Image (spheres, rainbow, N blue to C red):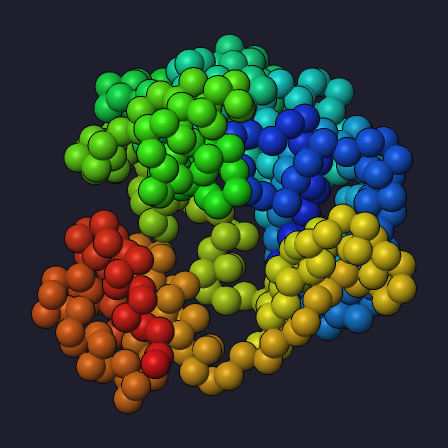
Length: 391
């Protein structure tokens, strides 16, 4: 591989799932075999189109997200990844990640993933408590996850991420600590720990959305067949956040991004590329792209996306050339998510903001003319990062 190629990341969206979880607002749904075939045909066509246009680039990472990419058959996965390798130059040490749900993998599929070049697996566990998984609408149990994790290790995967979620309905501080301790005992290379967000137009929004009365919550829960368990209060959620940092750090995981922890050398390179504004192309339904300071999203309607790829080769929607102000905003807004922070740039514009946040104890100086969020700054990162939006 010619190392002079410009670095590029590739995201592939696989919008298939067995059923939607109660909290999910992602572009995913259960699809027929015919729809799946149509979609994969369009996805591969889009990959080929970008590969032909972007010859000066080499892929440093590929990320198969969803949805549930692990619903692909071995033959379907081989087809998609073969199209990637045929269309792009792929760096020899590229990180190639595939998201998977417990219970959707078997030894044959894991072997096919390895043969297709997948070298990083991201497992969506969320919780080790079966009652909490049921409340979320997950299709697996903790026991299903343990079987999947063991199979992945047996298949040779040496870089595994586990997704966890706190502030769940019916979750206590003790059950969250139990989840963290059980997962760290398995020694995965990477752990993502997020708080539940009640997204608009999801089943959870009907029950837990802002402004809902108790009567409305009960009615919605009955209609949806979901038990309206209470959400942890603000103090408990805060304690959960602190427990994650303490337990994960003690187990040898360092926090390198607001919600992500890794053993040394196993930070997710694909996601770091997003925070550092590495150019990337998104193929598939609703996928986002950043290329030559231009951003765009693909069409979000399933049939519209397929038709657009058929007509033009890509599912791209309206493209926006980022202004200089937008580029400066993104540099700080995205870069400061990393615990290492960013080098100070555009000081003529941002010196007042940086000085203000440092006086408030929300930003700290770091080696190499850098600034980073303090612990308190991480706690209220949305407030801090909003200060970098230019009026």
